[in-house]
Length: 414
Image (cartoon, rainbow, N blue to C red; front, side, top):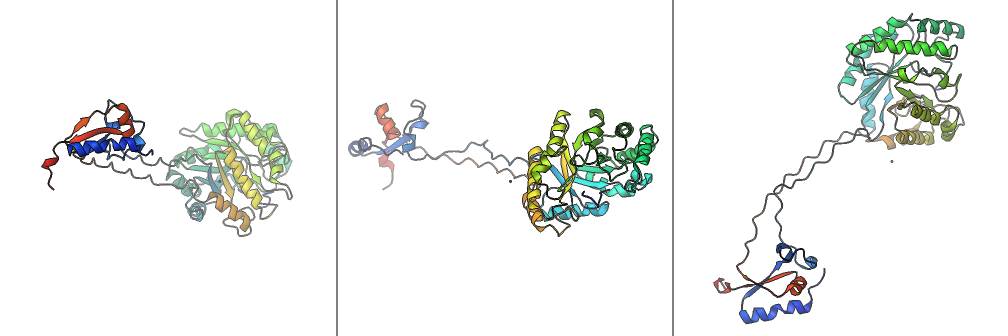
């Protein structure tokens, strides 16, 4: 569940050479033509080819115009937005894509309610619409935030959280996650990206790491191994802290490369007065995430991001989109409701304009261009019967071809 309360871009022919033709025409009374030297294998390419008239050429029967290459889906990071929990979130994706000029939203994102275990198990009627959306195209990604403990936003005390984390590490809650994994496989979304226990470095959620980091790491490992034990699964697990240090350094919660596939980060425009550059360089900030993921050979992601404490901030919006274009996360999904969003929220018109201008038409599906049919060969022009006259190589080079004198001129009608 999204914590609503705290989202805390020619050479002219020389006169002497031309004059050499005049006595030939006058003396013989015959017709004279010049053949292109390029057509004479004896001469080879003529250095004065540019001076000669352009010959009529016959296109090769095999020549074709290649179709435009198909659009490259990975040119930009795959993106989407969180628009609603259930079926409305799916239908709104089409509307958001239309608003963005047909941009291709390839990431669908929702959250399992963390109020009780039965919801964390993923009720089938809740996941059906998302599974259908994912299975409509092979290049789509379904991202599912999964709470690690029930009563996830109920303000459970640190002492009780510690007890529950230890119980989880011992296997007391394995069946809930096995049930979830089986349901996802049955719905034919076995490659779901599971954002497990997100923002664990904060204080908002019951599945926070701070009260007992060791037990939290052990519990994460247990959940991952349980879900991976289900036949047919291809889950990817996304370790996603909130940006910055928060209650504890998120690096203390990292459970290990064997059980993490993606290093994510939820990054909102906060606290008040903090510039984007400071969000990059702060301890455990955006740069730390990129560096940490590189050290551990993991891709990055941004499951949640958006505006928050600095109001309608077009500079943040532009810089965040540029950051993602530069660092190429596996995916990103904007949190699109007030105060964070830009489409469903009318409180941020300047940032909305930036988001729309930078993403309009992005990765828009393009129908391949139909290949142009090869041109049909034309009938070659009838070569007149004439007698070539050898004037020497240097004259032919000046003329741009050989001199041919016709002796059948009397056969032509006047």
